[in-house]
Amino acid sequence: REQNSWPRFVANDLNCTYVNLGVCGFGNDFIYREMEVCIKDKLIEDDDVIIVMLSYPYRYQKHDKYTVPELFWKMEELLKNYKHFYFNSFFPTFQEEDFDISTLPKSFVNPSSTVSDILKNYEVEKDMGVWEYDSRSVWNDEKNYWEGDYHPNAFGYKIIAEYVYEQIKNEI
Image 1 (cartoon, rainbow, N blue to C red):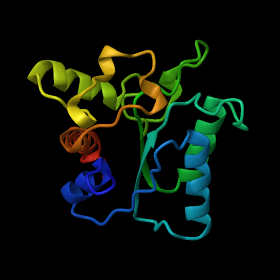
Image 2: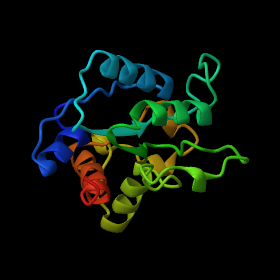
Image 3: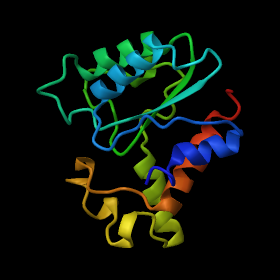
Image 4: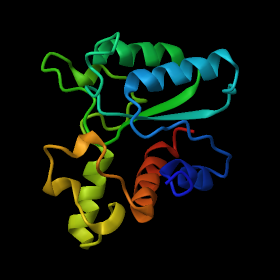
């Protein structure tokens, strides 16, 4: 999965090296802490492009120190001096009824959409499997898809990469 991941495909399109800090099962709090370490240890250069694929926001809710909006704004403060973009992975990050997504910075690409929406639409339109093992489709079992049971196959990762690249190419 790591070698056929969307970050590798996006880096190929951008003609740059990449580091994939993603870990299966990481929640957003873990992502934030990993970015903190990378910045503190100067592993991120000033001209690097950071793409954050946000995780299911309530996976570790009872253990998280911050609410979903608080954590997002902490990430934004941490990354404010870098070229960065946020995407929803398989579940929208902001579900709070009182949170206005229009307040999000433009670096949050399509905050009401997810990459699983992109994959679902592709799968339906093209009648092609985009999920690992071609045995399941997220859109057939939406009540549990966020638990991490579903991962794109290599072709699905390429679709995600094309989507991410198209969204950011003019901003870099």
